[in-house]
Image 1: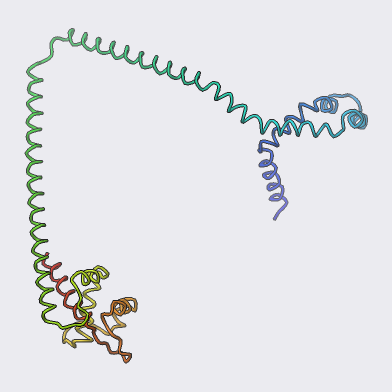
Image 2: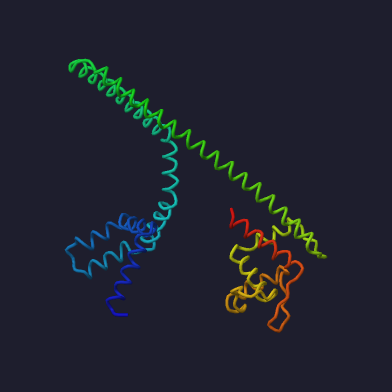
Length: 283
């Protein structure tokens, strides 16, 4: 660190300390209490040695530092309470003044508004009566716009109602198809697990459509050995995390020799995922 930077750091540190309340208060109290030796030092015509001897003899004692310090501490501690007390005492008066000032401003605005209204009416009288026909035409135009907007809003409401009805019908249809497929799965598979529709839906909620598609492709390639499945070895397209996810839900069994088997739960889930993806595709 250069000498310039050192001096700069010292000045900045000193400036921060001087800005503290106790430091400023002490400096001011020190000047007020010790004004006589300060004036002697600055304005006396005696030599500097005589000034120092005179100040040392008559003014240099512990009171010169203690009393300004006490004044500074009392000032820093007491002044906030004094200010708070004064604000509390003058609170009602300040609120009254602001209320009266606001009322006066409101009254002035009302008078100004009344004057402006009278001036406007005077201008209308001077320039002649308003064109009643023009006003009626404008009113008719506005009524036409309102009727058009009402018609558009009514059409939009009807369209929304049709969309809602179609959505509800689609939901009912999809639910019926899902119940039908679930019944077919339970009839076609004999399993000791006895998965319910709610349990299948719970497992379904843990997987995205992309993960469901990967599980189906995985089973087609590794389990059912379907040709043309387009599925590559597990470490090529299936992440380790997704493989663990299939195992965590007891859907596949790792045989330990780079081969896999599907569990009873996996068979149910395989068919269920195909149903769900088929419904989403046709929705």
